[in-house]
Image 1 (tube, rainbow, N blue to C red):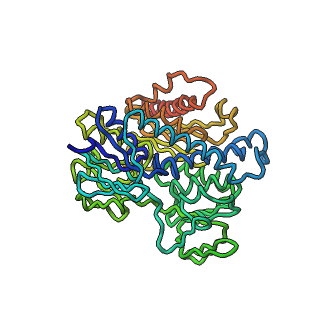
Image 2: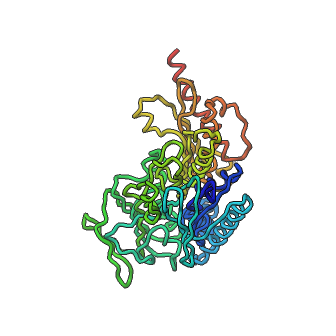
Image 3: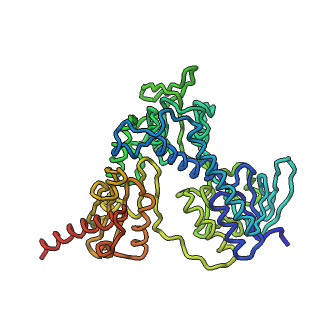
Length: 467
């Protein structure tokens, strides 16, 4: 008889939820993770610290209050790294306590160390002392997550040339910084450091940034970031990064040279599978360290599952949690609904971006007719109260059955606001529901009613002409 019904390697969002779900089903469960990484990358170097850092930046710089109190308004003039990390350490500490408590309450065994396969049902646990012990399980869940990918041509030192993991350990706020890569992580950090007053240059080999988002929203973000003195170098590739006593010099293939105090690479993520000895379990990973799974998150070996960032897209904490729960349920024959196709995307730039459904470009490409309804925060009482005159909500509505095809939001609270649209779309609701609904006043949620009225007025004009 194996030691456990389920053994989970990794305690991030996916692994944690898989373990808790299996425990709730009355199974014997164990989790293996390094003692300093309980909660995974999400809590220690990813989602939680970066979003907490963002809150600290917004609070201390007073950036969002400047429309009301003037452009020179700041809560603190000389913001140090200690000011920023105090909040981060507090939140991370609390979150680790919450996870340890949840695992303990549900009688999940937490083993401190790293795991590697010995055979498909056996994992060797290497403890901090170096001692190894064998753990056997009927089912295994791989939830090891990812680390930042590092180009071999760049000499990272973690202080002046760094990745998104090191950026949280900066000794001081850099006066200038080059960020290589205009993906989600790159743009989130670009907006945070720009808000702190760093002169940021973003280098991206593609022609644009965040191409999964609405074009109008991206144009608004670019405008905001340029206003914070961010320079964009699109269609450019980094040839070399030189470290000098007084900073760094980034040399582009076009010949441009960019001096800066620091350089941060945001060049994608690499799956943490190198030390798992996957071959002993009959498994393989691709060049980016990712493991292939089916719709139930099963690998090629039916009793071994993989969830979270290690399986690739969408690699979000929210989706990883749902994958972990679904994998545990499937392993023990518990009925589980398929994850809904409508998954909201939240990007914590300054201001926030969030969307669900399709973009205007995607609908146009698919030859799906749509009408647009827009609400601007400056027209809402709540927008005036909080001092956000730039935010907007956009609804994409089908003229045929009046359902919502997409919802795009930019501005304060966008990542919260999007869930109203997600719920209406998920339940097959129409724009007429939003027109007739009563929202609390004054709120940002009222933007749904304003945008819905805008869309239905446009649809009415078309109907009148067609009569």
